[in-house]
Amino acid sequence: MTAHAYLEISNLSIQFPKSPVPVLRDVTLRIDKGQYVSVIGHSGCGKSTLLNVVAGLLPATAGGVLLEGQEVNTPGPDRAVVFQNHSLLPWLTVTENVLMAVELTVGRKMSKAERLAWTLETLALVKMTHAKDKRPGEISGGMKQRVGIARALAMRPKVLLLDEPFGALDALTRAHLQDEVMRIHADLGCTVIMITHDVEEAVLLSDQIVMLTNGPNARVGEVLEVGLPRPRSRIALGADPRFLAAREAVLTFLHDRHAAPTLTAA
Amino acid sequence: MNVLVTRPEAAPILASAPLPQPSRVARLRPYAANILPPLLLTLLFFLAWEALCSGPGSNLPPPSQVWAESSELILRPFYIRGGLDRGLGLHLFASLERVALGFVLAAIAGIALGLLIGTSDFAMKGLDPIFQVLRTVPPLAWLPLSLAAFREATPSAIFVIFITAIWPIIINTAVGVRNVPQDYRNVAAVIQLRGPAFFWRIVLPAAAPYIFTGLRIGIGLAWLAIIAAEMLIGGVGIGFFIWDAWNSSHLSDIFVALFYVGITGFVLDRIVSALGQLATRGTQSS
Image (cartoon, chains in turn yellow, red):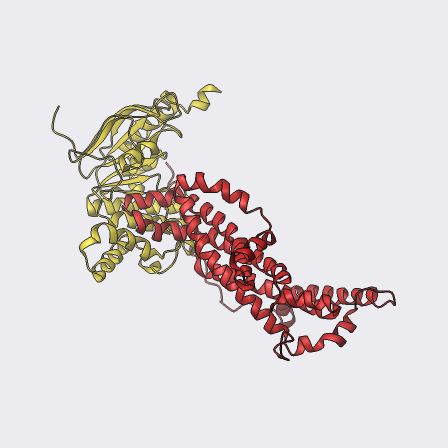
């Protein structure tokens, strides 16, 4: 076996206690530092389960996850998660939500003023400084998700885990936020795993697209390298043959070879 | 391939005159719509009461007679004429004092027990069946035992309040703790918030709306129980006042006292509700 990759998922199988078959079987992935990897597949194929195992929120049944050669099986700030429904604490302001994460992770040894400065800096990164004293109930869905991203980024994670981060947003807000995430990824050079069911999103953002077959017993069906140069512009890429080819490859996988199970049954 | 040939033109800027304001009458209308119906129906109620009870064979006094006989109770709530002959306001304070003490004790013990049941499966399995049985015992059924244990009226009444108010507080707190969303637990796990800090910073604020619902039900039940308990234990208190008025055939006084009891219960409910609103700002609207 060669040297370990930065993040390695090896022979990972996940089976829930009451189910006769595993959700995921023998998933192996090697992710290099700084890569943006998307995991795509039909609903119910276990994408989010995979992410939760990497985050340490769910235990692996067999196999495991290695980060820089160390096994990870508990949650930790080195693998920050951006949840689909933002999961901000509604009784805290935007600043307090991020500050709480800073306080318990990177900010352990900082002074109070340094923590606050760090928090505000991160909020500036996602352009949320203007709403720093608002509560989550007072800002829009897109803004909440920005704060969710800021909270994760503030921990300076080794790996950023995005669980369908734009799924609940309208198309325009989604496009805007995708651009922001691309910019942040370029600025910080963080390693990202993103769960998505949006083909264009996966192609636009990723270096690698991991396509899962239908669950249960889902496996990695195919891994597509997206060789498009960065920075990428959604407008310029719209007509780029490489973009179109990548999109078609993913679409073929999802809708031809591994169509949604309900559709093939019908 | 589609190419836009013409750029869309910028929309012309319209003059920004303020929209005409609605007239004064129109602005007052929504308030009037809320105030008029209760006023009207209260008036109707008094008229019907007057009509029904004015007959010669009536057992209950009409409102006019209540006013004639008991206006002193309404106009001078704080007089003291020695012994137990004192204003309704003072009786009310005596009752409120007991309720306050019993309720505060119930809130402290109830929230603590609720948090315990909510967090520990062992405590839940062990205590929940006991609580489910005990909570159905009517408040006054505790009074004889309580009198036997404390040998004095006031602590017994406070105990009855305590035991009445505590159940909804325990149960709602436990439900609140069990219902802390998995999302919040996941967030806490990722930032490694554990132990007491997790409890103070996630569980308690997330459960706060449930806890306040329990407190609100609790204060309502406590107020129901104190009146009945005071009728039995005597001394001062609005419950005793009602019983005393009945024994000395002052029916008009009872009507006035009932009115006081109702208003006080309403105010108590509103106070706890307002405290809840204050403490759980934002929590409900996530």
